[in-house]
Amino acid sequence: MEASTSFKQDLLLREYGRNVQDLVNHILTIEDRAERTRLSQLLINLMAKLNPQLRDTQDYQQKLWNHLYVMSGSQLDVDAPYPLSAMEYLNDKPQRMHYPLETPKFKHYGQNVELLIQRATELEDEKEREAAIVSIGKLMKTLYRSYNKESITDDVILSDIRQLSKGKLNMDLAFIESNNLFESNVSGGSGRQDNQQRSQQQNRGGDNRGGDRNRNKNPRSSNQRNK
Image 1 (spheres, rainbow, N blue to C red):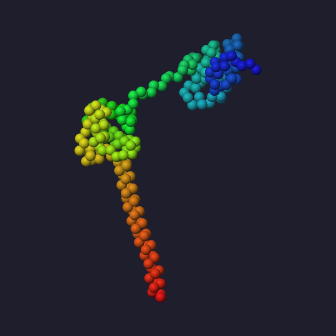
Image 2: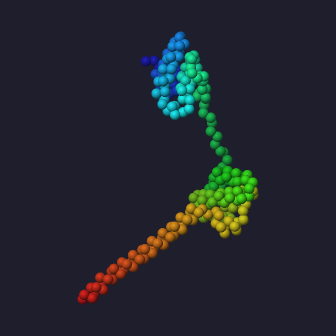
Image 3: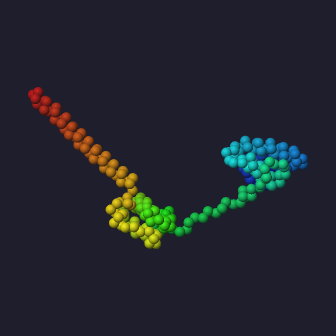
C-alpha cells in the first residue's frame, strides 16, 4: 500500500475521510459530463449521511456541493444546482487574537470596571450618570472585598471613581453614606437574615437548656417527696 503524496491536500475535509476523497478523484477522471453530474449527486447524498450535523444549518445542500468542489481541488466541472465555490478561507490561517496589553490601574477592580466608567462618562443625562455611579460603586465595593477580604469606605470608592474617570464622575459623599448607596441590597438582606437566624437559634438553645434543667430537677424533687 503506497502512501499518498498529497496527504495534506487529500484530507482537507477530514470529516469525510479517505474513501470519499478517492471517489472524488474517480469522478474527475470521467469524461462524460452527465455521468460526472450523476455520480456527484450520489456522492452528495453519501456526504450528507457522513456529515449529518450540516442539516441543522441553512443551505446545507449548497455547503455539501462546495465541500465536494473543495475536495476536487476546484476542478469539478458538473451541472451543479448551485454556484460552486472553493471556499478559500478553509486554507487560510486563523486570524491572530489580539490580547489587551494595558494593565488596569487597580487590579482588584479589573479592566471591565474601567470600561464601565468610560461608558458612564459618555452619558449626558444627569440622573442616568448618577445611577451609573451607584451601580459601579456597588460593583467596585464587592470586587474590593472579594480581592482583599477587607472592608473599604465609600470615600475611597468615590475617590477611585473620580480618578478613573479623570474627574468626570462625582457625587455627594454625604448623600452616598447616608443612604448606603454603595452597599449591595442582597448582601445586606442576607446579613440581617443570618442575624435573625442566629438570635432565634440562641433563644431556642436557651429554652432547651432551661427545659433540660427543669427536667433534671423534677426527678430529684419527686424522689425526695417519695422518701
